[in-house]
Image (cartoon, rainbow, N blue to C red; front, side, top):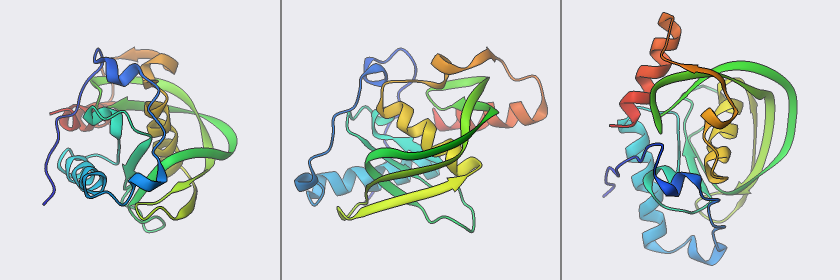
Length: 174
């Protein structure tokens, strides 16, 4: 049975560490599979579109995501590696680990990432828009980077759209 895990926020040292690579032999371990289930449960309850293991105080190179679109299924990505990044774009972003704030950030419009799935099988995820933004955001977490490290004009939200981004992030941090 999956459990909700507390989401840690900026100031917690785990968020600033480079997460440890997952040994593929550990993927079948019931405790590792429980972690994945717990991360999905926590992400959906927030509600959010992505959650990296360091955000639940586990320093492992693993994240889950579900952008709720017709093109992409919910995904588990273990030991991700960016294979392709095309065309920089400016986006407004928030984060559950920095609740209540938004900032302008440069991300790639299109990205491809390789890694392992929850069964230890090789996968490659490719997409653009929110899907690409989420992949980059979660990989940053695995590298000990928060969006505020890269963003400009980090602020309280000023528009209705920014308010929605900040409220989603704040809800995720509860």
